[in-house]
Length: 92
Image (cartoon, rainbow, N blue to C red; front, top):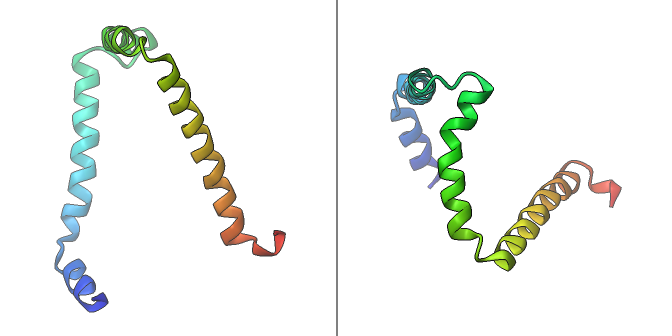
C-alpha cells in the first residue's frame, strides 16, 4: 500500500500543489478588494448580516451552544496534552 501511495504522490504535478493555494489566496484578496474590506470597518460590515442571521436562528439553542463551547475548549486542551505525550513522554 505504501508503494501505491508513493507512486500516486510522484504522479502529482508539483505545479498543482502551488497553484491551488495561490488561487484560493488570490480569490480571497479579490473578494476583499471588491467589498472594500481591508479595513476593520469593512471586514466587520461584510460579516454583520450573516452573524445576525445565524444568531437569530441558533439563539434558541443555548444549551447546545454551551456544549459546543465546552467541546471546543476540551479539544484545544487535549491537542496540547497530545503534544506533551508525543514529544515529552518522560514528563509523564
